[in-house]
Image (cartoon, rainbow, N blue to C red; front, top):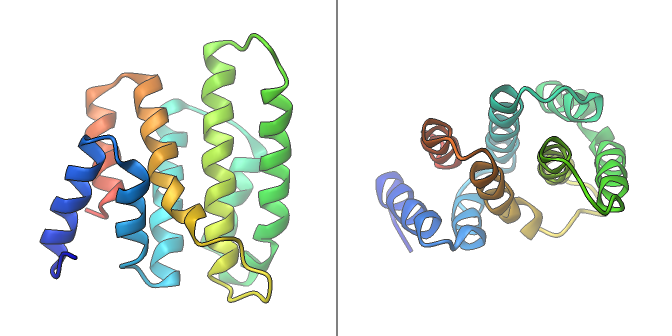
Length: 161
């Protein structure tokens, strides 16, 4: 296990580049406090929204909840809304590139909502691996957009730099 921030970052980068994104996400999440996880996850979602130009009220709501700690207990409901929207998009047999990007962004949003909810120390938390999956979701979006600059920005956001 890496024992310094630099070693942690380097290991996460190696895992990301090797396609082991779930493991990269696990490594990062396990080394963040619940509050830091919220900020980390929200920053990644915000980066995606800004780069992709996504306008989606349910995603915006997740980002708003992250900024306002008193609202965080509502993240469970925000997860449900984003997850339901993603499920509806999954039912479309032939999706456009924009729909696929929205689907991946909604998936990221409901993962972020779960991280936010778990940070409230609820009696019914989501599985901890939801936070780990943020890295995999981000990598999928990076590949969809095919933008080297965004890829580097995403890696920086993932590693918290």
